[in-house]
Structure formats: structure tokens, C-alpha cells
Figure 1 (cartoon, one colour):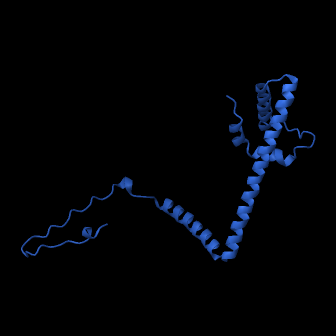
Figure 2 (tube, rainbow, N blue to C red):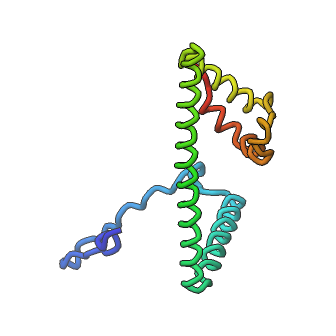
Figure 3 (tube, rainbow, N blue to C red):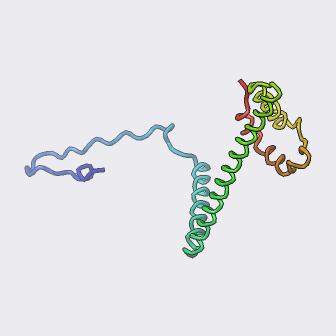
Length: 156
């Protein structure tokens, strides 16, 4: 809102009439804003956010920075794990393709078999631990992320 929206400059001629600015039309009943319940819920949500921020700000700076350092260490660990996983996947793919070539199986057939096996695990049909090389926790982890993983292994 500018200053001219709030001030009226009256002409120097005292006989000149003062014409007030027209009032802005009032909002329709449909545009009345949030209901009381919505306002209460929004207030509660904002109060929770403020409380969470107050809890963070109440910590000493050294503790806040230590939490940040822990987060960075965890992110680095996950990044390294991802690199290790990608390396192992590439190595196993190479082994699978080399063995398939020795047996006269095409790369397309190897990929099709891999997709079939992945879908069997995702659908719970293959709960085999492969001679102890897959821990039950790994199968549980896969189960927790089935919806996401199904998108990755969708065929066609």
C-alpha cells in the first residue's frame, strides 16, 4: 500500500468539496477465508513448527554443529555404500555376461533372466537366502521398498 492510498490531499480552495474515495467492494461469502476449525489446525501446526525450532535454537551451537557433522558423515557413508554397490553390480554383470557367452547365452537372455529373478524377489516368490549370502534383514529391507523397486524393474 502506497502513501497516497492512505492520505487525502484537500485542495487549497476551502469551498471545494471533499469527495471520498469509493469503498472497495466487500469479499463474497465464498471468499470468507478459512473456517474456524481450519484456522485452529493451522495454528496448531505452526505452533508445533515453532516449538521444534525453539528446541533447535535452545541447543548450544557446538551441539548443533556436531549434529550437522554427524549428518555429513552419514551422507558420506551412504555415498560410499552406493559407489560400492554400483561397483559390485558392474562386476557381477560382467561375470554373468562372460559366463553366458561361454555357454552360448545372449546378453538379452541374461537380462531377461535377471528381470525375472528381480520380480520374483519383489513379489515374495523368492525368499531364498542363496546359501547364506543374503541376510534376512536384506530381504526385509527390500520388502519395505517394494513399491519403489517395482517401478525400477518394470518390464515393457
